[in-house]
Length: 200
Image (cartoon, rainbow, N blue to C red; front, side, top):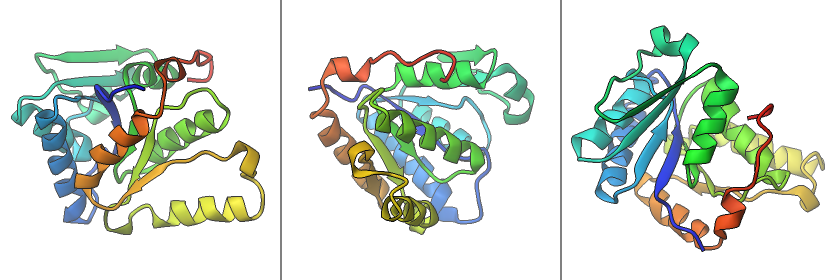
C-alpha cells in the first residue's frame, strides 16, 4: 500500500477558451496545498500551468517545476523559492517527473499534455509501473480521447490481456479521493519500477 505525497499534473501552457478550465486548475491547486501534496508540473508560469502552480503557492503548498532548457523562453519558468529543475531535453523532463510523482493527473491541455498522459498509459500497459493515472474530464474536454480509447479496445488494438485501467473524474473535488483509493492498492515496489532512460 502506498500514499500520495506528490502528484504530477499535466495541463496546458495556455488557458483554453472555457473559463471552467482555469477554475479547475485554481481549485485543484488549492486542494493539493490543503492536503500537503507536492505539485510536480511542467514548470511554466503561463496558462493552466501557471494558474495551478500559483494556486498551490497561494495556499502554502509545495511546488516542483520541471522544464527542458529549450522551453524556458516560451513557457517562462517560475523562479520560486522552491524547486525548479531545468533538464537538457524532454526525455529527461518526463523521466524526472515520473520518478518524483506518486501518480499522474491530466487536466485540459494540448498535444504536449496528450502525449505525456498517453505515454504514462502506455508504460502502465506494458507493466513498467502501477502508479494511478487520472483523466480530469472537465466539461467533457477529454471525451474524444475516451471515445478513441474505447474504439481501440473494440477493434482489439488494446487487447484485454494488456489493458490498463485509468481513472476519470468530472469534478476537481473527486480527483484526490480517487487517486488515494487507487494508490492504496499499489505496493511501493510497483511505483519505483525501473523505466529505461532512453524512453522516458
